[in-house]
Length: 177
Image (tube, rainbow, N blue to C red; front, side):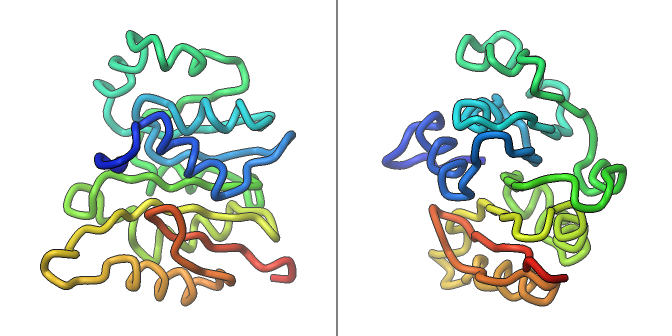
């Protein structure tokens, strides 16, 4: 999912990747491949490996014919097809330096906003690793604050330095766990 006002999808992906501070040599887990812009930006900032998960085969097919998505074929990118809430269980503890959770809206993928999923992200992140979770502003017109619920659940799972950032939420796994 990406912002649709005031920023292009390409720029939106860049902002997310810069927000979570992908660094040279880092390993990144990208939840919600979409057209692959987040994975591509992670490579551009020096990531040595990106694992990206997409549950919709049709989205991957669109990326295959999209010229902007060409770098998804880079050998440093591994695309996994499946439900991220299940696929994440296959990774070892402390496997990634950064996690970017860019799920569909809550109504389509509520499990990717759940405490159970956040606990799995916490598990696969290395100590000191950062999570960026795109949330957007759903419910704003109805005076609902979805990011506040995300922040609360992330803190309950052990994340620290949890705050709103770049239309989402940024959180860090403590160095000492």
